[in-house]
Image (cartoon, rainbow, N blue to C red):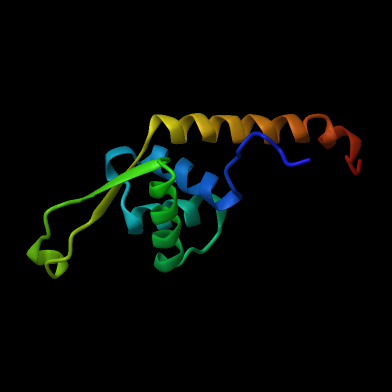
Length: 111
């Protein structure tokens, strides 16, 4: 029987957490840096871009391009925000994982 509830994947959870942590400064490089800093996971810009595109199609995030600047070689930054639907799904996914792990620390404590 297929589960009826949807959850975020591990990387999607990391992306949403990084975007929430960064607030108005959430764009490609800052999201990659935040994930690396807090998890130790190296992320390519291509993997992030693909994931953000998919998450935007699902309505979990929205993005907008800022005006390009000469200092950036006239490239625009893609700023990202989590939608209310994305935040709700992230909270549900986190809560489900916490419930699943509840009590396992004591059961598998090596002391």
